[in-house]
Image (cartoon, rainbow, N blue to C red; front, side):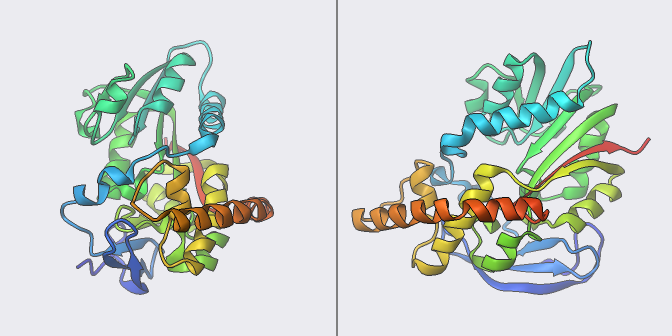
Length: 302
């Protein structure tokens, strides 16, 4: 049982007493730090592998994968210095698709992933843990696309990235925004709350606190990733009215859970309709800085 915030040491207060894991049907709670606002999943299982079974993985971005990769590469190119070799480390690189795209765009790439083989099969250099990145390595950009919320020790991972980042380098982090409109409306039914895989739950204030504590300064921030935000609205709405969660999302990402044809069809039809209706909500969340995703570009304090 976690009694105090693992980042600032502040007291924790109960936020959601019961949050269901859609994969295992286990129940967890979320506590929020009274001081920095960081949300903590409680309890945090000592062994996480059962929660990352094969049905967890799928086509993570569906039909929008190319748009997502192009946008993320644009972030890197806007931050990189011209006229020199560009080195990238992607922490939690998944299947390696982003690393492969960056490599084709001229970056010298390396990644970390607990299961490195799928990315290695694409021909990219991937370590099992960030601690295995060779001593003395320095990177122009480090990326953590929806990774930080999965990390057990936030302070340690941010200290590791600081050690590996060039003095003028940039760190990019994307996390679900628990201060956004989606999180406020759908609460424990929100698609991107995803306990217990998401050990921590950030809003803009708590993420900024963690980064400042690690010696980082935010340079730029964005409040939307279209693929995450759109499904965040439609699937979360379905979670409020359907007995079984995330079926529409599972259909789009190619995951199979043995649901009947009629259940799948009804979720798919209604989910498609809600997704279309969600387009204005994505635009409003983006304009007001309260989208479903928070992305920051940060640099080290010099």
